[in-house]
Length: 385
Image 1 (spheres, rainbow, N blue to C red):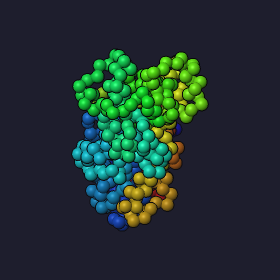
Image 2: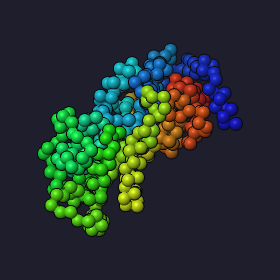
Image 3: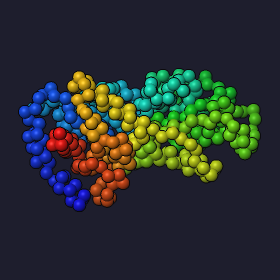
Image 4: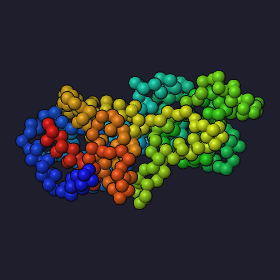
């Protein structure tokens, strides 16, 4: 029954748009919006370097370019990262041909800079390691958030080339490597994987060194002693362990290539697989990004600020049921929205394909693309209101 309903709902794009126009025409142009949106980016608005034309049209419509002069609040939330929010907003504004500012955009590591979550308060002045991205871009992002003592795996390799002998540090890497950090005498308090690592082997090795031979009070790269691992583990068990944070759980993601590619979740599983092979257990880690509760709480706060900015007040009584997450990944977009109490729409332009069978997490609706999804959500909300 569900499949027949979904198939029927996907067939008549023009009919749905006419229903939407009929429902909205004649409404007060300054009336508070009754529906809000959170959009995933890759696989929904874009496919790798390609921008979907439906995305450009629907964002212009939501921004007020419609015959009713009504704006609808929305944010973009992605498990991507590796660039500053300001840079991503500039790039997205150009690609989508719609103004996107920082109040409308959230990426996987954005909440690492949140003043209401514990990470910045705990580690702003402590040595932390960040992973992922190109060069030291993620170090600069961490600095922008307020972390003042940030290192990377390349810094470790520049300090001691024997840490991982299978990678010869490049001239570009030398330019950005820190040379003022004393790895032999300074404990690293946390590891945060901001973005997809580019050198999995080096990063897995360095992370293993830090979490198995170090603690928040013990340097991992001590050069003047070499105790057995069993002796060292007995000592470390009584000390506060290094916190390990992954910002993006996505095992796969959709880019320009015809098939999904491995994401940061793949790196997480590679690291945990090696750790388990060595120590018969996974290392305790904190997971951020969609579909985690912390990420959706932060996104909901952003959406409510958008609503207040448009309407002057909340404008929505049952705000959770008036928010639609539009995504392409059942495991992150749909699962997170369902758990948060939002509505969810699964589109067919990204990770999920109907040919694969029912999605692992059932959305409120399915749609062939983002434009159809938005019209369906607005029409559904107007009818129920």
